Length: 323
Ligand code: AHG
Ligand code: MN
Ligand code: MN
Image (tube, rainbow, N blue to C red; front, side, top):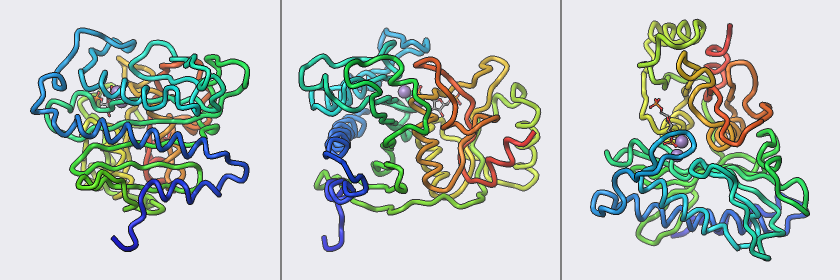
């Protein structure tokens, strides 16, 4: 195992990127790493275990019916961060309001986390890649936790990342010093650095969009899609944002979820889908836009706010968002 660097070693080594770091962020990333392994274990046996596959009778705030694995992943990630001392509150796609930790040890936690515990839920039952997305902010006031802690623009993120439960499981994250990817070696249960300093090609040959909505897209987006076809780009759409994003990050491409007539603000959520992925994408040399402005500069006003998303290779995002 010479030359193999584990995620644990990497996190400790990178602590020096933050001159006055106390190690809290390192410990927080370690908690996320553990939850990712637990969720991975359940994802891998999903077909075998009745408690994991299928839907519950509960709907989340977006009106979507929760899957059993949505609930499991949500609980695992919350309990990994609860009462550890670093995080004082969590906002999740699966909870209407932020969960504020009142344990004495968590009350002083420096960070808040926004997350999509299970992204791509509709793919769980059909054995297609799914993911977890997380975004970490410093809390604004040491004496109280409020909604404003979560309504900070994406530029204020301290760290962001995702886990992809795919043909192999990977954890990819940034703390604003480049993007690094770690692959889980299932035989030893350890994430190992496999993709150091990830960079997206400036241009790409893949476009990812739900073309079933084509006639509902704005005129300029339809024109861009037509151009993609004329240039014979490859259409690739898994329907799990994390998986589509990850492929495009590695190969070069663009992912689009524009506004539609039915959903004028698009479908994806700013706080726990667009912002974390935008931070990673920019750190990898790409761009992320809502069609009018940089995703990271959008001022959030609501916890579960939606936004259109154009994210990927720089040249492609520029072309797709041109009027
Ligand atoms: P989630 O499973 O967390 O609700 O997210 C689903 C999202 C995203 O993963 C995916 O890219 C998109 O929904 C797909 O939407 P369409 O089915 O409308 O294409
Ligand atoms: Mn999602
Ligand atoms: Mn989800």
